Image (tube, rainbow, N blue to C red; front, side, top):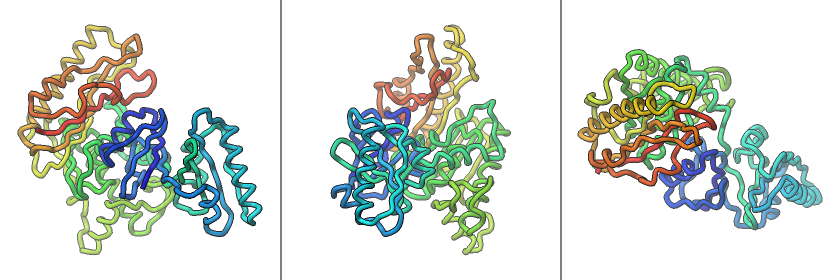
Length: 406
């Protein structure tokens, strides 16, 4: 099956994530990527893609006329060269006229631009879950039917509803946590993901939601307790949803519907088998210094945000930048050296390290790739371009490095 992905605001990261999971990905434009896979693509586990669509092999009107009876909700996004709100609207109304002549009732979702926003698609139900609510994506003469829309509401809830949060240590976005895990490539369900800088447990949370086992350590006792509290909350939330509890409220992870994930399934199975505390099988969190700690086995993959240095509200002067680079580089290299003796050959390691904004708008990175290679890692890309995760004007960006143990 040929798929189209609408890429996030940092498309190179989005493409890297898709490539890690599905193989070859073709960047069709600054916003669009095309790939093929025999797998069912679940957008709920993709942090970097805003929409996923399947190619329609037949003519779009033929496809629309075959949809189940009843009122249709139709949206059109046009990613063709020179597309505009006008071209997308004309396309949608053209389809509506024909469908109405055939006796169908049709509501067209209004375009404010050539493409429907993620929020518009999501809130109009154009996510592919209802066969009579359809979004078509046009790219020149090819058409795709949207089968997944990024659930921005769910990301917000499972970030902000977590009981233990600490803005002083920085907030790792759940989307980025997903990306870090996915950049490790395909892993079997139940694989153990290690986060040696687990903080409040965002990477561990996303690992559990995908269906992996989460193993976290942190130097701070307080962060260890925060992670434990957050993951227990997550498991309780999944337990309620998987057993048919309330679908809304602070304990609900998904956007107003039951939480359907491998984690929820395992919780339900555990209860049927008489296990009353499934969290003991799902995650483990310990206090320890990542530069010297001895982790338990197995470790199937490592995904983490390393030490990012002190929080900054303005561009650092050169002497402060130099000090921060030395401190962060020492901790990150110390961790990778310690880790290299404890993981098997070909184990994937994805780590976000700091990069600092300069007055010319560029980011100054840690130049440590050669040292990392000398420790026994293969570096995924030494070009150092494209895998920076940041908001406009953000002082400390996250520089994503993809490694594998030699």
